[in-house]
Length: 149
Ligand SMILES: *[C@@H]1O[C@H](CO)[C@@H](O)[C@H](O)[C@H]1NC(C)=O
Image 1 (cartoon, rainbow, N blue to C red):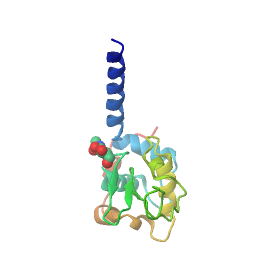
Image 2: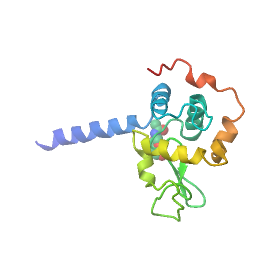
Image 3: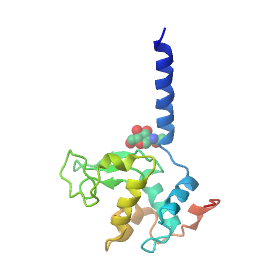
């Protein structure tokens, strides 16, 4: 008789975790704003949000396996070959971070690593989907209806 409540509790938590994977566009804008990404290295919030959508469709816990065996992690799909350590394949680990940390709902590790990535000469061109879906396009609509305060 004591097991039923436990199962219900576990089922609830799984549901919460699943739902938490997607962040809403304006909630993301707020977090990025709080972490000073608005204008960081010349990129507007709209550009950051387009990047996040192009890479993960706002799925905070997205992990994608590449043909070379490396993986892309989190909202910005940060790659384990160069930027984070997944303890599976060779990594330069330029961000000095565990790839798993890039899946945390508070986004802080992902944001910190993304700042490092855009600070290089390639800027957002580090991200293929940025080049394909965001670069050189009108992007201000990504912020439509978002109030930052
Ligand atoms: C988010 O990504 C994870 C891992 O790739 C996947 O299992 C999950 O289904 C995705 N969630 C949504 C809502 O797409």
